[in-house]
Length: 401
Image (cartoon, rainbow, N blue to C red):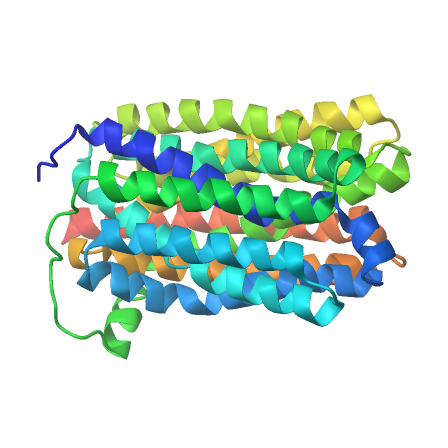
């Protein structure tokens, strides 16, 4: 299925788009102290900043996935960027807690339109030989966006104005939407224009492999989003860093190493998949199993240097999962459901994020982050083992039939 431009040039265009997406959603986590000061947020309400976004983003995912299977994906991508940039601007203009949370809700709804369309477009353009690498490279923009957003939000709050930070980010998004409107090639025609149904949703979970992958992704995102949402504030309070320093330290080490893990995990899975059909599942499971203890240790370390070291290890192994979760799912679901399959996985990850971002804030003063993360680490390990056994059972049954 040929596109006007090379498939990896499309990856490059969408890499920038996803990076902007994550800058706009991530920068808020580095300005929690000024939100407490200017808009009178409590710790629990700061948890709502992430949770409300995630709930809306999550619940919209299956609908967004269905749209990506029925309409031109390039147009959905541009439309999403335009709308979420306006929502980012609204965050900077908010004059009360309620208005700020409302803007975050709109941001979640409009950003939901992007991911299933982008991943479906890339998956259709890349075959088995390059799919993990293409989706992994695209996903690595999330890491860059988190690093930039974490540093940028804190720096603007410290040196300029958190409101100007949102306004400038919104202008960048609006400008890039216009660039993509002209530069992004038209997506292939949709596979089917038939209306979706609950049966399509149920069919995804008839695959034992997809179901086990979804459960593993839930556990993985439960830990991942505590990092994204709460590590900057944890470093600010635990080691008395500035907002700029805490935002930078909370993102650069984990995200840079995760980028290496994404590249290595994607290349490894594509190579192994030539001989082992379930390779993408196995590499993803290995990533979850190996990153889990380091996630706990990052929040339990007694010194800043150890926190950095453990976050590097966590990021490296988590990259194996990031590179392969969607690529693995496309090995077991029909092409006509690529958008829906990505949307449902993102929904499941979003449910985990929504619960854990709020729960971490609510439990911060009792069991603390480390207490919560030790249980999530156990769940991650169990889900990784379950994924491997489910995939092995599926392939044994397939060979015997």
